[in-house]
Each structure stands twice: as C-alpha cells, then as structure tokens.
Image (cartoon, rainbow, N blue to C red; front, side, top):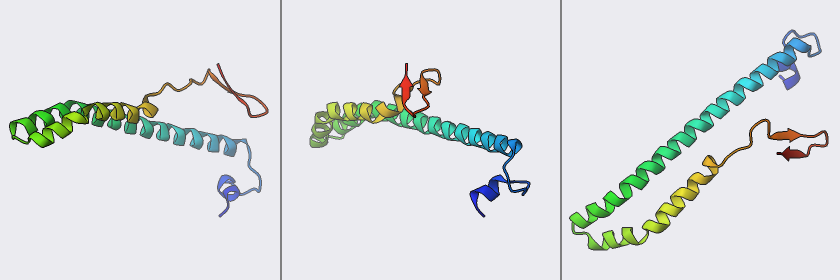
Length: 114
C-alpha cells in the first residue's frame, strides 16, 4: 500500500480537503507526542544530573570513611572536570529554543529568526 493509498481513505483516487485535514491533524498529534517524549527525556536527564551532582561529594566522603585514600584522591582530583562535563552534557537540552513567533520561513526557504 502506497502513501497515496493510505491518505486516500475513501478510495476515490484523489485526496480531498477532509483527508488533508485528517493528515494535518495526525501530523499535529504526532508532533505533540514527540514533544512530550522529548520533555520527559530532558526531565529524566536533569534528575540524573542532579542526583549525580549531589551524590558525588558523598562518594568522596564515603571513600574517606572507608580508608580508601587513593580512591578519595582520584575522585577529588576529577571533581572539577566531572561537574563541568555534567553541565555541558545538559546544555543542548536546556538551551533556549526560538518560539513560533520568532521563527519564520520565507518563500525561498530561508529561515529568519527575530
């Protein structure tokens, strides 16, 4: 079954306005689901990063209490790099995205962001 046959629900050989509206509605529904899934993934990444940032110092203290001096020194020496890389890993998901009013595509396909 081709894409045209899937879109032509009534089978009359042409796609009328109701079928176009149905496809547009389905497209909007899928975009909403994708946006929702993206927000869920970003939320999970943020929680994971938060717990990592909060538990990292406790791991250093735990190594100190357990007399694992070499492990404690190793964890403490990479702490600065860990926090910077953790923040950089979240940067793409927390960056500001242009709103619909700021985005506009002209007839020649050039995107203008204001």
